[in-house]
Length: 229
Image (cartoon, rainbow, N blue to C red; front, side):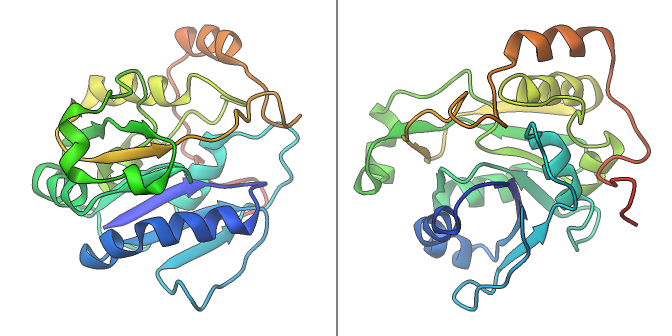
């Protein structure tokens, strides 16, 4: 199983936290983590984390472009699972096993998460009583490699915050069977809002949603910046 995420501009400490939070669940489910970052490095503490340098500066950060760049380089077979996530998400062993049992070619899934303020609250027994983030689709977006590739990944025209996961879910739902699932524990660790705090990650939901209504994303060069082979 593979996990892909964009962490361009994040401190290394954020990646370290993500890997520590998820160390046990990833080990039990043989997960490799692929990260789109602003530099390339190896961390001997986490041999299952592959960090790839996105080859361009991003004056306005595009999650889609960065995720796609990494997605094109995930080394796995077409029927293997790729999960797109974010660096503030905590996976349980249960949700990863649920994904492995349910997702296959032409059948994808978005797993719904719940907010927590501290890591000790990320416990499976409390899951059923926790309030779920039913509108969020980016915490755990799951398809096989073949399906991600057939759809050319995320819409790379989308920049800043807002609209990317909704667009991906809508487009995927037109092509394959997609479900939203809140049955297994998945957690989002609360943090200060980043939107508009960093100049390269502005809130652009209205602009993005207007733009994507009129044009269905497709590009044979998805995930391949001009100077990258």
